[in-house]
Length: 167
Image (cartoon, rainbow, N blue to C red):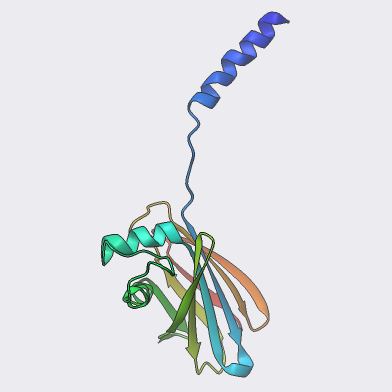
């Protein structure tokens, strides 16, 4: 019995010795179509530290995503980056979105976007490359609520585009 316990301990030591903390790189984008307003409302949730790192490397090393220490150009940089990395096609037509603003909640930045003047959605295509240019393991989850149907996509580097049909 004593030898069995000793053998179990010896087998378990390597398991604990080589365990490392793994950081996950993920964003979640919620897309909702509000037919009465002819509006596609989008909320992207991104980890602040990851987004801040990217914005510092890409635009300005002084950027801090914090209400109290923010430089005046932060919204401009966020909008520029999102317009570069997030593309939406509705019914086969590229649609520009408006950056409405952002807010912080604990370690997440919420970016609010909207596409107006959408009378109906038969097909919805999204390309989401947010943070993929800095983190190889980045995954972007898309959750939609369009025409009363809820659908999801998981986008990764090399597979950063998804199409949903709502016929």
